[in-house]
Image (cartoon, rainbow, N blue to C red):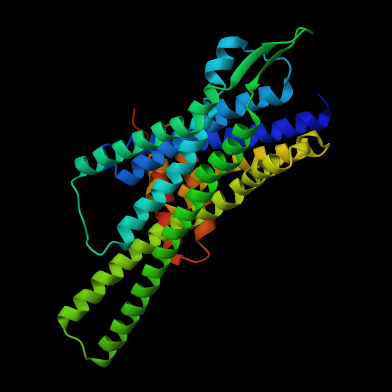
Length: 360
């Protein structure tokens, strides 16, 4: 391997390692919620598991296929039964982001304030989670099992990969993968985001009008109470939008190159023989890794509950006090410019962590 190959591989590994640590922390923090776990937390946990599969299993197989295309080292069994598995992680990751967007949409836009019992909600969330995993397997993973082949070459090499009929290759790559893993999810996520934004704008105008009426003294206690309820709900809706916005942007940007490349291969197969194709593949892989690694960062910046969970988790470690203070300061820098109350709360958390004794 040349120096440039080592540098590129090291860069990929560092991004993947960062994502593995972040998603592992997400799984641990949400697992510690216990009875406080909400359906959205359950979806986020499954998203982190899917991203862990991408960053470990899918990424490792991708490196093997790239560095040893004609010398498959894992044998025939791994080729026939493990080669198609990465698609299930990719599909689950994409659709859990979509499910989270739908869940936020239902909580924000629905007129009625429906409150299910926690156990019923979690049962429904588990059913949705199972459905996402099963459909990811049936749509994205199962077709590959019918075309993947293991071949031993005359020169002693070994090849493993899907050998598609020409008509099926274009249908699967350009149709099934592109539509079900980018176009349809992005359309659903964008729709929910726009509806949430519209709801927030309407609520803001309503509250502004109510405040003006209060200043003029034309409202009673009942209207004042309604305005306060609307204000609290608006604050909740803005928190939902705050975590949804970066998810939409990161997904749309990082998954776009892969979708464009897939469609390009279908209509222009000769691109795979061009000298610059390897650079295109490298850029696509980096973007895909960034997509799976960025989600924990989004939770850390946008979710106060997740930061609190990380803080509590670090406090149980031997070096937890120091780590907790560093994490609090890291995330406070991204929020302190626009929120002075957050700076005050951050300082109190630091003092609490430094004075709290670690449990034995």
